[in-house]
Image 1 (cartoon, rainbow, N blue to C red):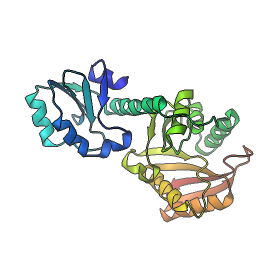
Image 2: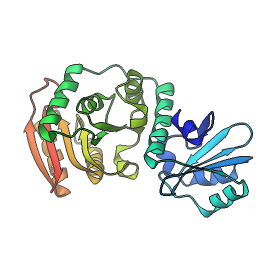
Image 3: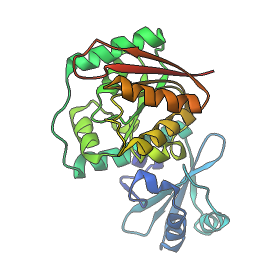
Length: 278
């Protein structure tokens, strides 16, 4: 496990129970209350505190500060314990934390029924190549990724997916089949996505919906959150009505939108919204 390797320990347990709870300051207080015989501080190359690991003699437990700030009491505790200081690139620790929680989902969550079709992945890849041309090496946010059809298409293009969904069963399926890669995957609530994700130039939302009166508020919020962190977004839906809804939400955020019909697949991604910053 990458987290243990970066902390130079045999095994480590993150005290936050899931990725979303990394924003919760209460775990900082839990860390401060834990007994410890030794400690490690992991800092980034620009010396930002990424994580603190404590050993109580029974094993290492770790709190991470990727999504919340440490408090002064942490550093006083580390000084008292004469903590070992380790340094690593922030992106490496981010990948390690994503891997940690993704492996837990793959192990603990029952997978959804298989829903992958290779022809759809090829069709998505062809659509994205047509719209974006040469984007090899670029990071792409795969929003509402499901079991990973978009991530497969993105890797086929040479892009690096960062995939998220809020359904552990779908994520478990994608992780167990290898369509989703643990260090590239997070389980988060899409209506709060901008709290957890960094800016990316490219993003996809494949088959967003079915969008109707009962859930349009939720999908509008998810769309807005994705647009908050992404410059160029391809959104696919099943019907023109849904596409026009997405178009209106994007225009409210002052985005340029092109709506087009897509006949590459009979059942999926029939309408496309190509959304860009002006």
